[in-house]
Length: 486
Image 1 (spheres, rainbow, N blue to C red):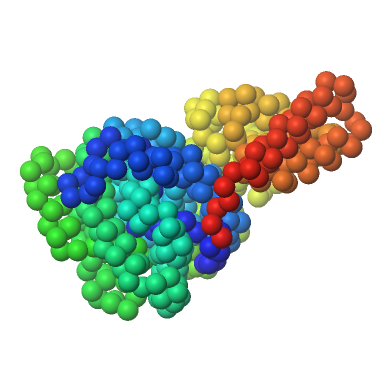
Image 2 (image 1 turned 90 degrees about the horizontal axis):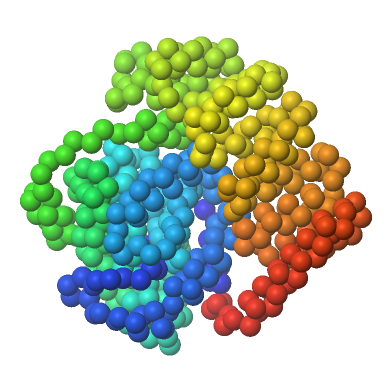
């Protein structure tokens, strides 16, 4: 895992975060408007976006629209049940086998694939997200900064580095802690335990109102604690960044006992996402062997469709297309309904040289799953493979009318304009993709190339000129803002 530089490491893995709070837990100071004045939501968002620029370039970044879409549906379902949530959240995954999740300034919440696979139920995974969301809504970062004082930002950054480093290297984390004055850092870590208890309490409420089994929170944390005791020198990263105490577990247990029991079935999407991630682990042969063994033993864990889907994904990796198609037939027999199954069916068609077949599958699926971005991306890519760029452009234009902030769709549109030889439109679309990702200098460069393309009409050229002025002004305004600590 890449070790992010100080300039962009205001990530506090124990979830010290953003968003205004309407209430404050017992034992923690009510900072009121002071917290917002000294460390505003706008500053938190700016820091979070800065960090995300680095994270999106990291090799561990999981650029999988289906996994991302699932995490955001789950996370926003939870956030909608938090009375204090007054901002947008963005959930993302990192391909990392360690058990960890972390929240950042501005409502960005990352989840390691190892944690998704370790969750025994969807309620367990939801409990982790609810906990992180609660760190955000209670504005723990602003409260910590206010407690430390603005003069302690250097120590705060050192703490951020130490906790982030703990995800992959305890030795590196110790070195960062020593460099940042250990006593001050220890005081802030002690304070963070109060935040953990507060996030537990608010998280349980969010989990219950969202319709999940609140016992998922205690069962997941108890299992993590047992794992940590068995492997003391290799404890889960989540325990290092989220201090877990016997008191916290007891407090959770007492609160859960007073609530009625609720059995909640896992969604098919939860099972399919886990199967997809597991199919991508290790070698293709190992993945195939694992899923074949589960089918033979009928170890379905509640979803035969998910096991067969995982096997088909593993066989696709192994390039055994005939075997994967057989599993797809079994999925149809089981009448399993999910956009993830349709995108897999289309991928199999493409791998067999049947782009027209892939287009048909995805066009049929689009009205059934109109908000599923992976379906839209797959349709554009399949149309390009079928040498139908004009149809692909129409799809991108229709999609961007409904989802104008979709950076990936703008990039696909740029690719399509390139195939059509429309250079001005290509650079303009690529500029919008960069701008949405926060890469404003690159966006300006693309618009300057669009100005020089020479193949646009007066109206198109005027739009490029106008957008270029907007982005240059944005760069100038950002240059006037206080610099983030380096």
